[in-house]
Length: 414
Image 1 (cartoon, rainbow, N blue to C red):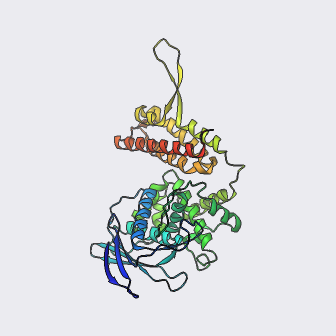
Image 2 (cartoon, one colour; image 1 turned 45 degrees about the vertical axis):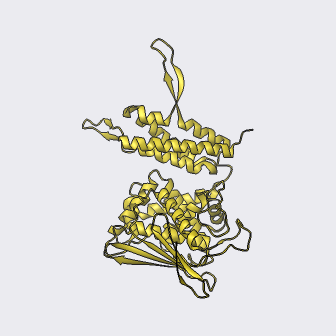
């Protein structure tokens, strides 16, 4: 931290740099608030430079994890806070094109709504990644992406993303990540894909901004749940500099799912309708959801201890199937698992939806592209690369530990 020039009123302006070096935050330090620490009803932040740098770094790590982005930043992001003289003071983001890349300046009021802060941080991080290969023209981002991804992170990350003086960084169990968005859409109806893609003054007005955020949340949540959704969103960002508008990059990245934008519109409306109508009658209880997931993660096989013995049933984990089984035997099993994961994802208890989706993504990465046709027309199975197998095994082990932690948290011993 560097303490430099004095601001009006004799207070020193300080500069703080984040651990990765990408963020430089300048502003006046904020004292401990008079209100009670940890008050969850307070919706605004007091942006202290030191804590703001930590918050931005935390948001960056979660954005990169959500889209599997490489942490090789090129664009420096300079954040300046200024005294807020009015409610809802403007947030200004500017980009500057240099000979060797792009730089970004962000001006924030010292007191800012939490949702606006996270949305701004996510937006500038997405822009920095998309512009890494942009030469003369800045990439156009989908207007719903930063809005929806910010809501997704805020609803799924257990630890608070944004910090302020006097407040503890609390961890809490997250239940249904779409609960708030679902209730809002159920009450007011969903915006269309066209309205999310080309929002007007009505959609972005103070009266409708929360609905726009809720619908963007649903769209991003459902895109991430597609079999290759995370990779497709990342590919779209990488392809943005090569296209005049984001729609072309979106269709190119999601061509396996949406040949045209009208298909994306229909798919989104069906997803929004399904989510808003999801209730206790269509969702399995928590205990049933755990049991169904356990059945999916284990496969029954017949094993003989010796040649003359009768076969006995044994349970084999996914890790063993992926690492040891021959491709011709492994692939049909993984494809069947994928279909079962999709059914479970749509009926599992809300607390397990995200981890079911993560398991589905790992299994999909191992099953995808393994079957091709030989010259005689018969299917040909190829083994996964050792690097892919190692990554899949590592991810499955992490998910198993996460599942056990969830089980201990949600199903305590009687």
